[in-house]
Structures are given as structure tokens and as C-alpha cells.
Length: 284
Image 1 (cartoon, rainbow, N blue to C red):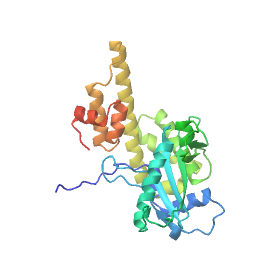
Image 2: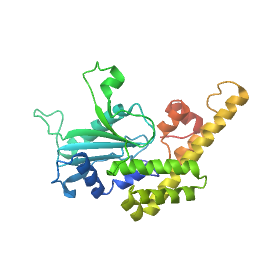
Image 3: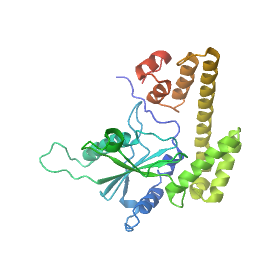
Image 4: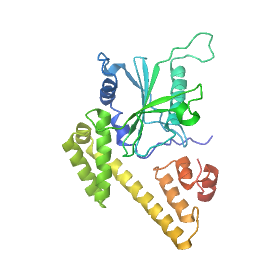
């Protein structure tokens, strides 16, 4: 039998790294639910869905507190209109695993016990976004009996998520100023600490954060090169050129580096995963 290879994102975001520390998860929980002050670190159980194999469902943060809440937090720098649908997938998988861990079955004659879900997305971009997103309203105009509601956290403030948003926007601003990534990263950390954005985390994990920002910087650079090349070819040929061999090569390189998954690369190329695999020779 062939050996299974563990597939993880080669770079986890600062958000994911931050919330591997239960102390920051506790801070997040207390800020979301200020009336529940008796919760301790020992009451928190991390339930984040990790990317174990290619195309495995994963999210950025999930945790259970005293069996009362499943809090699923997804961090986004680019707004995704399908976030409510994605959250439904995350919630379904999280509950499936929860039933396994607690030795319960949805097929049992008795009612299973489930923690109450609360769903959040942390958005660090600059576009105007709603305070809440509804699956029912987004996809069915309010006419479906099924709904998933996701609260959107997008403001810079003193909360841990607000600090994260501030940090991300500082990084975006510095990427526009500096073409040298070391200068960009150094200034991002300096300004963020100065403004109190994740200061404790950045001081303690400066090297780790710098490495993640370096990879994000490279990803953005490659994306810009791809966009510029596409526009240039379109101008030269005066037609809709579709996807060139060079673009497939660029996207394949991002997959090999772990920057994109196969499905994400295929989406960028506007083709199916099967067609992307055929064009690049990559396999899930």
C-alpha cells in the first residue's frame, strides 16, 4: 500500500499561528462573550479542521468551550461571497467529528447532544462588507428553510481580532510602499507593535511572523506578474486569449510551493481541477 503523504499548507497565516495559543483563544472568546467570565484555558478545546491531504476541508480556527459553543472563525483578506456556504461545510464536518469523539451517532434513537454553533469571519480587506451574511438570503433570496448566519468582524479596534485586522492592513500598506520584502516586513512589524496590533505576539514570534509574511509577499508578487502578463498578451493579440501555457506554469509553481491548493489554482485558471491536472501534470 502506498504511503500516505501528509499535506499541510506550507505557510499558515499569522492568524492561524496566533490562535494555536489557547491564551489568545481565551482572549477571543471573552471578547466575543464578555458575560461569560468564568471560562479558563482548561475549558477550551481546539477543533480546527486541518489540511491533512490535498483538497481536504480545513478552516482557520474552531474551538469548543464547555460544550456550549462551537466557534468557527475564518480569516479573509479578499472577500468571498460564498463564505456562508463554506461555513456550512465547516460546521457539518466539525459536528461529524464531534459525534465521533463523543461516541454519539446521528442514527441513534435518542437525541444527540451538540454544542451551540456561533460562526464568524474576520475580514481584513478594505471593501464595504455586511455585519452578517446569511446562506438563505445570499443564495435563495430568503425563501429557503435552511440557513447559516455568519457574523463579520472587520473593524480595527483593541480586540484581538481588531488588532489582527489592523496588522493586516499595515502589511498591505507597506507592500505598496516597499518593493524590498525585508524592508516591508521590518516596517510592518515596527508599525504594528507601535500601534499595539498583536504587539505581544509579534515580539515573541517575530521570526515566525517574518517568515510567513515573506511567503505572502512572494505570493503577491507572483500574482501581480501573472496579471501583468495576461493584460500584456491580451493587448498584443487584441483578443480574449484565455489561459496561456505560461500562466498554467506559474499557477503550478504556486501549488508546488504550497501557496495554492489544486482547486484554488484551477479556480484561478477558470478550469476544472481535472483540466488543470491535465495541463500541468500535477495530481491530487
